[in-house]
Image 1 (cartoon, rainbow over the protein chains, first blue to last red):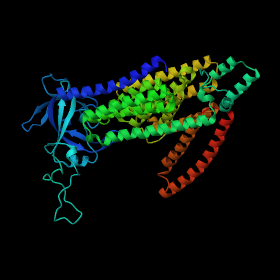
Image 2: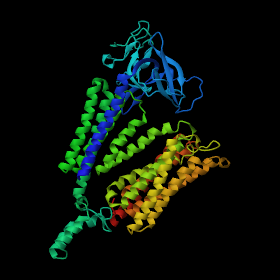
Image 3: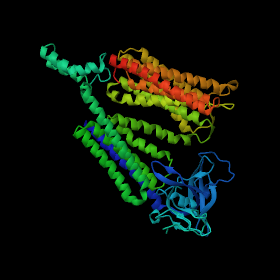
Image 4: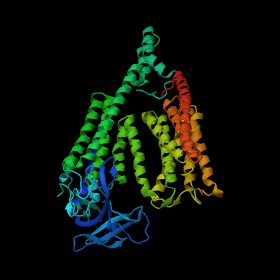
Length: 196
Length: 423
């Protein structure tokens, strides 16, 4: 192998590492410097072959109401915090707001709802149903000054989602009034087995 | 230096297998000098002059290495996909970065220091797969959207230089597959404003890109330095283009429902890609024709192949922009046109493969003919016949077809081997 080809080979290897490190650095920067906001969401549970199981997060602030929008159009959603700590949309702007405001950048997706690049949360295999069955799911998000967002945490029924504390799938308690082998539907009073 | 690796003469492999012993005998008999013998040997690569048993062993090593790489690669992907909560973020990222570096290092050492070309290349291929897993792992750690098109693009960009640096066909294959995947993941974003005809747009785009890669492969065959890259480019480009034409042969895909087959606007990036790819393909076809003439080779077959590429390229642009409601029969007309184009293209692949002695082309052509017959059978019989009858008849047709195709294939491959063409 000639010297230029040797150099090209190792330059490519270093390039691969740098590309991954740059990808990590951009996300870490948003996580470390961005403002934390809590957003209301509804999860759905599919599977990716390359990345494993995940939940798709459908945010309340993604709803554009009756606005006439074009797929691919960019919106800046200005956020404000409600007394219960959840951040909601105050206005949808096509121009970038001042940097002293907290806002998140979204693009109109196929269903005329906004997509923020934080619509996926990866979870361990077999735990998707637990999130899907929860009463209330919120997402803690870091938003930087350009409106880019990275998920910090998933809040399931008021508790940060920690898959390591889950030892078995969520099961409703046995009900004496139900025939053997049958269980009653889940209710909000049920708790995650082993959950925090 | 192997100057003649793709043009091994009329006696083909059998001639090359005999050549080393013949050269020794001619040298011993004083027919040629030692220098002349050396010069003749230098025209061919060591692999070409190796005995058949050695070549078969080499193929076995490649096969085993590739299977090993695929299994380890899948294992790595599934490990990170399933067990991500078992390890914290930073150790996980450190493991994947170290794995990429180690796999590349081991591949480099085996291939270039120990001269284990096949196993070494397989290790570099594994490093490329681990790098792809790494890109997706970073996406997973930071919860990047699962269909984010940047992930495949990053993977492709990381592998692309190695397609040319490491002269390995499996890495070339991976690079081309990633190219098509990167485009495929970007496609939905390009067609957000399209209300109907996404299948036509997708098939047309892949037809244009397939022809571009095929044309690139054909041009590489004309330039000695790029010849090692031609075979995989030609095969992947041809399969993609044939697959895209195949999709456009279905009457439901081309349902115009009054008006254009495609309705709505595509992103400007999409239009730039199809115009640029089309222009480049035309330039490549013309360059190949010029190079072929300069190399003083027979122009007829090469010229016909070039014309076929241009005709299919034109068909892709026409179907994207034409009014499908031609007196209410536009979809029928275009279905017939694309079926005819596919039939002619497959005939061309078979003839070209036969005349050039390329077994892979003949096999691909026959495979597409078989798939096309099954597809046409189900497409037109589903609404007309009883379901049980459809499956019984399909089974009988397949058995008969299999017998006839196998007989024809064997005869054709025997003729290719007799003619001594290279695969």
